[in-house]
Length: 95
Image (cartoon, rainbow, N blue to C red; front, top):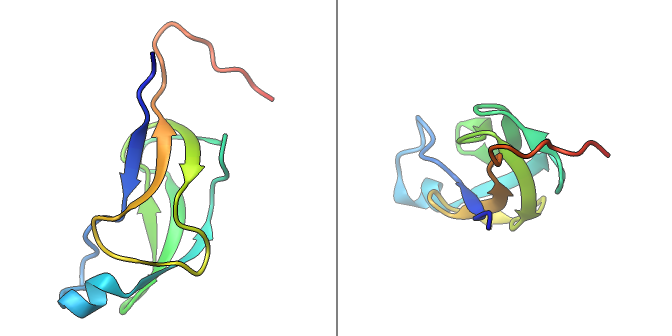
């Protein structure tokens, strides 16, 4: 059985105050549910006090469920989405 993993909002360099770390807004998802992504590929853009920043994938996988939609306010450490990591020995089906 394949386990679902999370994409969390990471620490953003230059965003240091506790208030700023809680006042981040989801701007745009680059990937949709069901899309495959590679490690370190941008998956979502967020707006912080320093400007718009890309959140990169922690590892390769397929986006399962978006938990925070466009316009949502999020904080550092919050889960943004879930994803399935690649499974060994299984060929990924293209739609």
